[in-house]
Length: 433
View 1 (cartoon, one colour):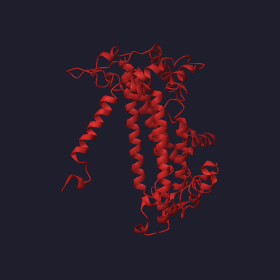
View 2 (spheres, rainbow, N blue to C red):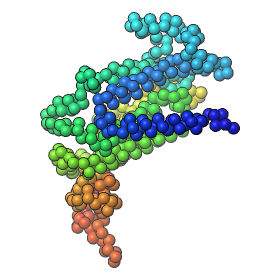
View 3 (cartoon, rainbow, N blue to C red):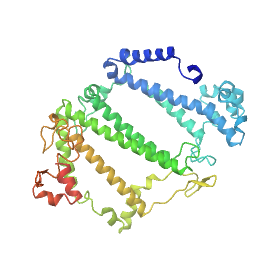
View 4 (cartoon, rainbow, N blue to C red):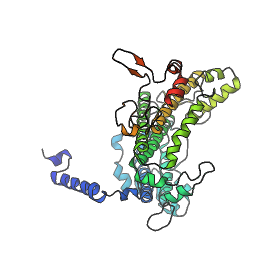
């Protein structure tokens, strides 16, 4: 059997692909200055990647997905449904399902967009047939953000001098408390790979977690709302991805802080934040005590906590409050009022996330040195628990050192017995030491 019959590239084409890849990544893009042209990169990413990409998705949904789903919802035999390219090439076939296609592009250029309301809608809620967001709403969404990104893609200054420059935007921002803290930030972010990668990972992590929650409360795919196992696995999968990305963001931020020549403001930040955070855990409100548990004894505080913690996480509703959406006998959506147990579970997870963020932030701020290890940047991996690239989660050794005879020497003396048995002690005396 020949390699072409397997659907693979023949050796000559494969060699050409390798040669072009080498020329692209090793010759044309070998200079770092190309990646320092951030305004040009932003314009191309916003207009080309996001704008044209969203427009392509919207076009595929309108010209292929919508007509095929119309036939499937009408219980037409899949063998009788025309192929996808027939809808693209034959406008009359598409116009039989959506009459506005007979009008062509005239309503678009005459600003009479309401004529396209049969396939670009804003229904809201879930489709009662598939239990997902309306596909016409989805197409409307992608078309709208495509137009938005295509406009935004012309916002930054390139070779023609029209638009905004990131350096000018950063240095023009003078806050009432921070002064000219953004001065020099442009040079740092365009010359330090770790600083730039840290910001990108942090933003991608936040985006992943936000999309994860939206995927569960507003399922975009057909029958996803009734596939409970799949939905749970998707949620867990994306939450793990978001967690790994945020850890990677703080790790690269720590490398940047430890091995980059910093301006004075970055040297002042660790001391200031350390003082603020240490004081926070000495205030009773921030102490980890049964504050939320005691709150349920006061009705006013109970309702306030319920609204703050979970009231805004109710899934999208179809119709009035309390409506049930069922697909093939399975519950796709049922608004459930949150009770005491739900609030406690949310509080547990929020406390866990906030402590994790504090530990990661401490690893960044103490990446260069700490009170116990002053020259940490020169030690490499000598301290596996607190090296400059390890995150610095527990200083060098919170238990001190153990001799050959088994004698333990505590680094904090008599303070260890008092601080190690309480969470506040760990947060106050060890985490921010």
